[in-house]
Length: 200
Image (cartoon, rainbow, N blue to C red):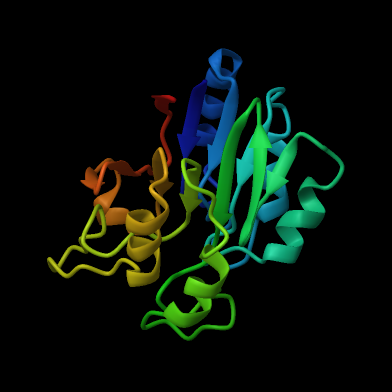
């Protein structure tokens, strides 16, 4: 399976159009959250992405309202919005979990976040060998902020080590876009708003 993956478009229509163009070569497209900016522009960004003709797996970022994302995508049955859920696409299981984890320093009304305990409950259903898609990265891997601090999720890290996904795709921490690492035997990639290719 050839996967095209991205994160953190934040209403960037040029980046969205580049993803649409590249998607012709993909078997599935993965979007790891933050289609909008501070809750604004989600539907417009999703409208651009709806030109993609292959199945899509999406999770909500901390800038995205999950219910609005689901409403924007519901007219296309090939788009799967996951939050503590799994779907199988062409025989490959995908599991998704959105939002900022752990709840960080921002307490603005638009910022969607989960505590570690709630995230651990939701991610427990990740099937072994899945492609794991989260908005937040795991703690200690592709999660370094500009000041050098690790701001990933312990719950996600524990899930990667225990469920052994075949691949983990994430975003959220802009300073870590394009960074990757390995947890256990799982490749972890912080994507950013560019075209990223994976074969699994």
